Structures are given as C-alpha cells and as structure tokens.
Length: 364
Image (tube, rainbow, N blue to C red; front, side):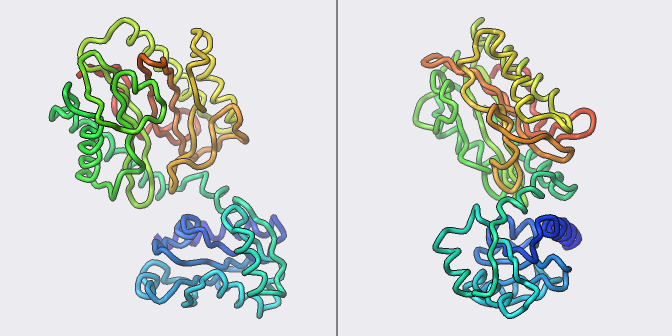
C-alpha cells in the first residue's frame, strides 16, 4: 500500500512545517512501519519538510531485498547504523539544520551519538509527531483491525462450540486452545498474552493463566486478541460455567450497563475524561466505584496500548477514525469479577463496533 504510506509521510511533513522543523529522523520501528511498510528489525527514515524526493530510508545489508519490495519508492541507504548514517548524510546538506528526533524513543546516549555524527545539525525534541498521526486510522488500518477482531471472534466461537470451556480444564489449557484457534483463523500470533481467569481469579484485572481448574458455577474471564498485518484486536468476555447465581447476574448487568454508556459516549469532539466518566458513573451510582480499578479504555493499532487513553487522567478529545477499547470492570476480591471489552472505531454518529461476539451473559 505505497499510496497510504505516501499520504502518511505527507501528513508528517505538514506537522514538520507547523513545528518549524526542516526534517525529522524516525528510528522507532513501529513508526517506521507506519510511514513506509518496512517490517525488518533495523531501519530509520529521514523525512524532509520540503518534499518526498528528499526523504531517505536506511537499513542494513540483511534487508536489501526486503526493502526493495516494501519501500520501492524512496531513496535507500545501506548502513548497519541506520539512524547515525542518515544523520551524517543530513549533516552535509545545509537544508537540514533543524532536525527533529523522537525523544520518546532516543536515549541520552543515543542523542549524544547523533550529535557526534552530525555536529552541524540542531537536533530538536519532536515527541509523538508520528504517534499523533497514528491515533486516527485510515481505511487500510481499519480493515486490518476488522480482520484481527474477526479472527478473535471466530476463535472464541470455536472454543465454545467444541467444548473448550468446560469444568475440569485449566486456565493454561484454555488459553493455549484459544490462541491456537486465533492462529487457525488467520492471526500471525496472539496480540498479547491471553488472560484466562476462573472463579476468584476473575477478580484480578490482569491475572496470568495458571493451573487453576475451571469449576461449575465459576465466572471465566477471557481477555484476548489477534494480530493481523501488524494490527491488534482486544476483546474481553466474561462467561459463567453453569447456571449463574443472582450476585453474578447483578454484577454482570451492572458492567454491561456501564459498557453501553461508555460506547454511547464515543463521539468526535468528546473529551476522553468524559467518556471514562460516562461509564464510571454507572458503576459509582450502584455503590461499586471502588471496585472499578482501571481506566475505561485505550487506543489500539500497531500497539495493543496506544493513545488516546480513556481515563480520568487522560488528555485530549476524540476524533473520527480513532480506534479505542471500552472495557469497564467490577472486581470483587476473593469472589469473582466481570469485564466486558470491545474494540470500536469512533465515527460521526454511532461508533463502529469491530468485536462482534455477543455481550449477553453467556452460560456454557
């Protein structure tokens, strides 16, 4: 998709001009992938504010053929020290005086090395320029997210249909089974280490699967996702083995109502704190506010957790095209907990739901 990468680099150049920068040196591999499509383990990109013809890509000799296929439209430089080689190249050109660097990703020692390689450049902190662009997904990215969510949906449906969630299995067995089924449905790998939490373990927000055995009457919390074309899906469903107790239905219905309120608040222009508050108030009004232990959600894309943060401490407003999760939870220590999570895309009007597994309380 070279056209998409050309558009993204053009948008980055607009930001450079707004910041008064001549160029920016991009060395973070996820940002490099976003701007070029390159998926190797070493590379960097020098983007000049003046135009595409002055943008230079660098990688090492292991990736010459891969770079010719994935980044055919840019000038290539081959050097093991990719970022330093690009800095040295820019040092010889008087139009590269004020050059931004990714201060979120470059260490103090790394900046010293850049300064030594290019003593005439004025390196300027340019944090989150590419990340700002990455927050709003284009059609190509949304399609990758849609495919990743579909792989997770199908894996869970298969797991349930083929008796993968039954009393006597362990959390680890269920996690391995679920992850294998995501691979069967096109995932390159799980998006993150899957969470399978049964019984009292479901009250631990980020419980790691153990040899704990599933029992009749347990909540089973499944938090998992698939990775396709570099994009992550993220979904949580909480089920019950056997007939739910009254307290389980009560907690589930409360979290379900909070999740619906959070989804409804996803609108362009909404403050991220207000989206969090819309769901949190439902739980607080039921007297369970202290048992909602985390933010409402987060951005998702090339990283499983990226901006924006839907939380009390979050900053900024939503824009159409942002992909986010909505995942309220109530956790009763020593007893059990519920989290319901979807991946959605903010749209004008109602958000687009990408995780399509039912949110009705599933009894297996």
